[in-house]
Image (cartoon, rainbow, N blue to C red; front, side, top):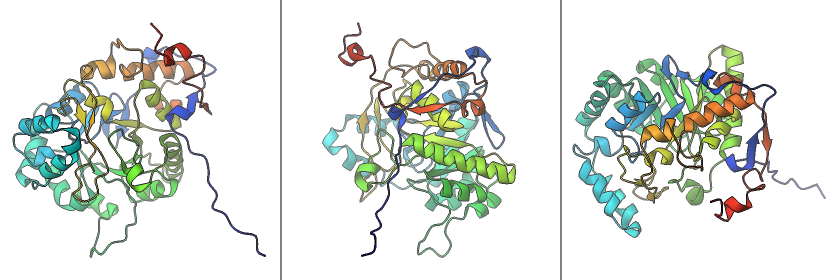
Length: 381
């Protein structure tokens, strides 16, 4: 009898499965450079607010810019469907949990208003802030040029899973190399989790790649579809593609780990895994300035037939400044994310993010429980 062939599985790791090993030298945290660049657009800190309606409004995007990062406004969301969004956010926050998804499906059924696209971009730009916007692939060829004409500095093209090759009945789908020619702004594309797809996207000329399928706190794609790769492994794989593309072309294309991060430690691990930037959703939905009124929901939550997200209550915990830059009055790592990154870089001897990529990472499933019995019992006080 022929020997049977079995599908082989390889291990994959998330943030709680790994740890960063200290380096051979240390550096003063204040000497570290944590800036990142996306095709000429420079950010003082490598933190990007996710294009979720509960996180980024025009006002939040301006505040994010003032604090060194950038907020991505969802041009397929509430901000471009309703002129006055305050009442909509209030209704969403007051809807009972068992009716939340149905209500979201209802409010997102209102069509996008073309005139609001430019207006929202202008609301951000008039404050001197860098403006980043997000569109889904189906709307990109129509919406992106209008956003750039209004002043958008960065275009994010986002879907749950993005590839350079897509089979459909469309006469001519979205081809990123053509989009780059037609849209005069950097284009960040996502989401993906694999070496091959990341390499192909970079060969199409994209300016950055978003990494992550289904890890977000408000996303249920992994439960509904069974698709996803834990974020540390996904970031390592995509970073390897970035490095190979850089070796071939001399063009450095940053990768941005998107979703599943909760603490400063997660931010640090993502960078060691190879991330150039970090996209945050739920941690920033807890900011006082976030429009979601203590709630968050995924971009796929209001899908009319197959929701892949849920509304979650995250609470309002602190100002955006405190979450990003501190000072922190909590010991759970959810505040002063920038300070945590700088201190971690100092401990491994990295003076910039690319040196942080070279830090040693180990598989350590007991890293958060070893010796922590009193913390786990809630007896730390």
